Length: 446
Image 1: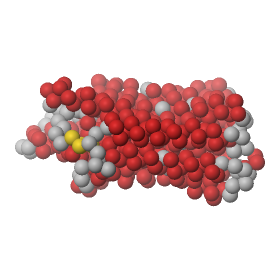
Image 2 (image 1 turned 90 degrees about the horizontal axis):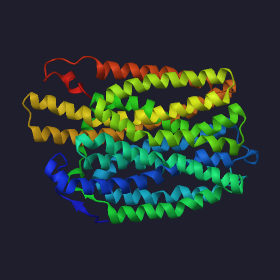
Image 3 (image 1 turned 30 degrees about the vertical axis):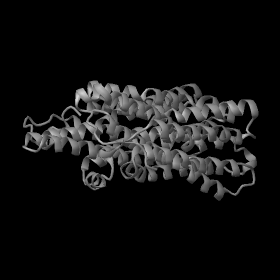
Image 4 (image 1 turned 180 degrees about the horizontal axis):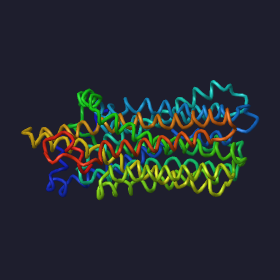
């Protein structure tokens, strides 16, 4: 696939950006969102398919929590190679390929979704569904290269938010099918997505571009894994995106097993949290552009502690209304945190570039390194962060197996958010040295 290649790309040049850069970058952004949106839908389709799996399937609550954990794990692992596929093949080219790969889990699920299918077959097909999880990493890495620093929070937030909306959209379609055709028609859901996958691939081929400056940048990965900030941001992203994707997979099952909701009743509520969390993600990026990503992330984690406490209280008094409100609030906060944490990544490495320049390093080379490393770190943080979804579903599985409720899991989530808030403050919000060449000065204003 030869693709369309752009040899000169300098978004930090205001003249270039105004003349041609903004138009090209925005076009690539919108069609990247389309492909990533479908990828998220396919990645999380098992959160909907388990609602079609009644007693005749012979799978208990613990088995269903494990089933939805499998694509979460596979999607997290695939985010690493997907990140570097952009440098190897080009952003436009890989978007086409990654979109077409989504046909595989969709068609396989359509074949096996019926009572009597062995559990291990469901596990294997759910694992293939993890292909959809990789699309996010390649999309974010690609879009990061197109936009200037001052626009990254908005662009990355919009790209991720538009992709995240794929979660509530497939849940809404599932709700419509359950309400009209019943739980015996899961193949209708899968039939809807096959033509949408083809549409996304065709538009990516026609409308998107590759950047020569990103190609074959394999050294960025080696440098990024040696950066301590890579792992700090990956840890924080477990708390934001990991929570979003984990709860997206688990919420319907929790409503069914803790509050006795029917599949239709659960589906009628499940989509609300992911929808609001997706829509507000660009707001998190925009707030981070204006107020600083670390400040927004810190207060957001404290708010997540409060929302989780509401959930724990609602569970104790068996209040479905309060429980649902607390969970929806938690979804909203995961969306805000998703936007603010991703804004932090390019800001951190641009801050390192400013420190290096103050110490005598070449300005152009320093800022080029910042763009290269931040793209790699976005992929690594996205991969590690997605593992949070696995941990959440395994925590729910263990909690329901041992106590028949999610209470133990909720307390573990609350404690983790406290740790995330502390890490954010200690690493990024403590007063920085006055000396502009001191290493910690890089994180002032992140």
